[in-house]
Image (cartoon, rainbow, N blue to C red; front, top):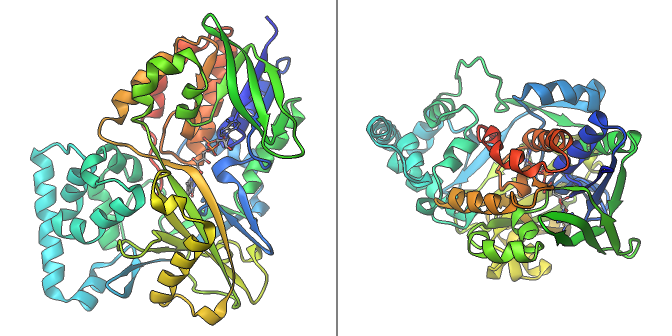
Length: 476
Ligand SMILES: Cc1cc2nc3c(=O)[nH]c(=O)nc-3n(C[C@H](O)[C@H](O)[C@H](O)COP(=O)(O)OP(=O)(O)OC[C@H]3O[C@@H](n4cnc5c(N)ncnc54)[C@H](O)[C@@H]3O)c2cc1C
């Protein structure tokens, strides 16, 4: 059978998959179909007039040996910047340096509060010895103690995930804590000096000059160099399934430059949201609907505010845990790479998360910008006179929500998809995996290897091996 492989989604997972497929099997035909006009997915560059920003600043960091070996082939030393991390967290009107130090808590809140937080954290950690956490709320109370949990973590979690911490799986704590366990994170946060052999991205990190798009361009160049095709502005909307195989992919143009497409496929690798993929599979979708409905993503609205001054602050990140402030986090792209905006002006990007069915998400762009500007002025970040322009961008699939029962539903969907023998789903969206770019690249490459090795029916082996992606930890 001629190998004509369609990769759906041109984020880093799809591109790494296509490049790897063409590397192992130069004779196969590989086409990447991307719904947006621009490649990159979450790792795209956002252009706002003279400014450029990542969709959330993307640090380059990996603990995966295979990706560590690959990155220098994609990004040269000259393209790489080393950026000192400088973050602040706003609480009760005071900007604390983040990670928050015990000495600052003592200075600002006084010895009683410090003693309260310290004792409560100790009690929480003692409890952790005896009691296994059943939710994210349990895990965080054990790590930080009830007092700090209630003050910072509980409101911040509700705000970011739009979900009660009791409803979230304790896996969220494991995934988000790069040091591997929460006790080590607490030590690092409060003492700022953990002696660990593992490098972390807490103090300094690598950033690609001009933004994360540099990595996407390098991956896309590899696909083209190796004879693959990249089709942008085309959204895969329907799959023709005969028996237990996909025979073709139907795609609709999303831009005026593209026209609808029909792609015959001997195998398909999908990196689009697993919920979207399943719903496009006709009869397969019907049997999985009840599980698909339980897998939800939280969306993100980015509001960029251009200011008529060179910098708002020297910070890379600002955190806003309090729920009365609409945004969770803010960043200034020029503090990652000064070339990302013109001299004398700067862009500040505010991250607002929202469920797609919420009133917040439904608001028109100008109202969202007004909300953000109102709260930013209230926080004293800049003055109204300094604002030049506002920009808005929406990411409907920013984070998969790990509810306490998400694994049950994800496993059921994967078991159902495994019946389509020439389809594999991978990447952050495709496997509902809260990950980083290096993980998504590896997931794409592993999918390519499985398709090449087990063609024409890679699915059974693929779904058996998903445990290999369970150890990923993201750097926060
Ligand atoms: C705010 C934020 C900050 C982050 N910071 C970092 C960081 O500092 N470092 C780091 O390493 N990672 C970071 N990440 C994670 C990183 O962005 C992701 O792990 C990675 O980009 C995911 O790549 P992917 O290809 O798996 O998914 P995606 O990038 O989501 O790619 C999926 C692609 O599929 C396309 N698509 C969807 N539907 C269709 C369809 N029907 N037809 C065709 N195409 C379709 C989408 O347009 C998209 O391009 C961050 C993520 C967020 C949200």
